Image (cartoon, rainbow, N blue to C red; front, side, top):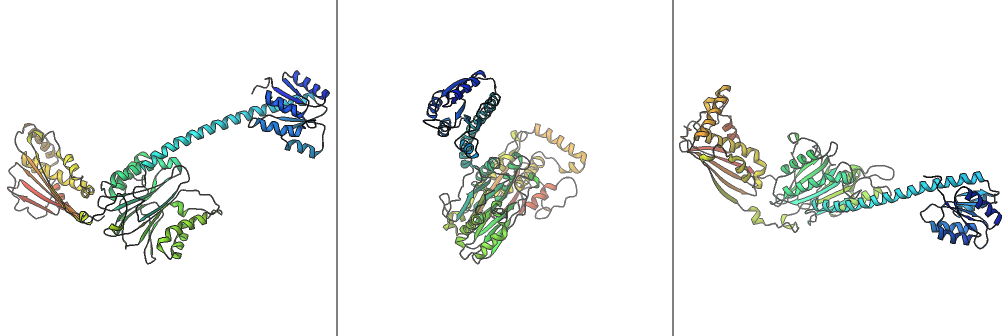
Length: 568
């Protein structure tokens, strides 16, 4: 602040001598002076000249200093215009009256030049601080408005990605109350092609935008996989993998995911770090679904556990899920709502259809006048017969659900491709287009790799597995393999798939035939393989994975049957 800057000072005093003295003192300090003989004149001059400081006599004709001060303060608005009352009054009541009228200080008569000079400097500094504060306030307001606009746009994107899916189905009720613009809780629900409803309630660490950042990849992964029929295990693993890779240390997502099989009246539950949800049966029994896993985004892929718990339900049974905001809701005394009060609400409930409302009301009443300090989220899903679940994206058709799906595929690898083309990723990609097979991609790759490798190396190329009985033999084996692949001009490997499935499960028949001479399989057919050397372990694993392994022809054709049961 520049203390030597010339100020515009208004002097209002009805006594000519006093006014002249003041004008002289102020002018000598280098300031510009405006004079008024009464309060009314002072107000008019203030409107015209906008002085920086006002020296105002308390008692004046036309309009006294008190009313003039009120009008000047009103006209100044947010701007700080210090008013120093010039008064000979000394009683406390009069001085208080000056302050109540908008005065900032007093200057007693007769005037002291030194004190007046000090007060002007002091109030000028105060004006500078006030102007700085107003400027910073306006900047903060602009930043705040810009932040709100950015958050509004981001919220629209967030809501489009983390939409509610099928949460508006007829058998679902939910409540979301966020502490900030962005909700740290995320609720997503989708229908699988087999008619199951998959629901995930997640609670990210923290609140607001930082917590909501993780909800977008979670929701996009969830909806991208659920609608394609991926199993709950696959969806959980993919979400955990993605969150683990993108979230900073300390940010993770406590979550409960439930797969509702309305046809079998069964639910599959995975809980990683959220408070126990509740199964509320028609007979009043309450069964907690407690957490048995770490939250999503904590463990690396290899350590992640996807095992779930299964519960059989009856029509009308209800499943409740909630974030920790329900349990940890606090009243004005700082007490938490807790699980005990939740269970008490279930005990007191005499109509399961009203349990959802009673729990919400109980939590809100408990919070009372206290402030909400966490996001509150709760979902209720009622077990219904498939045909009674109503949602625009859900069209249950019993005959379609039970229909048999069958297809066959024949594939040939020619000699020009033996060296440069690996058919396994291509074939595995085709197989895993079937939702039923996506959860078995590892096993299917093992089976395919073993059978194709045997057909190519032992059948087409004629390599003997005996070469690999010693560690040194492995080098020799693959040296010969490379040489033969460069020289071969004839031969083939035929691969045949027959897929058959329904809502209960299915089978995949895989037949691999090569152009080689085959082998004597009479002693091998239908018996377990006894492996003692470095080679031959692969076909033993295939036998463990498949229901049957059969050889045909001269031993150059093998057929395996892989079966599965849908337990979702």
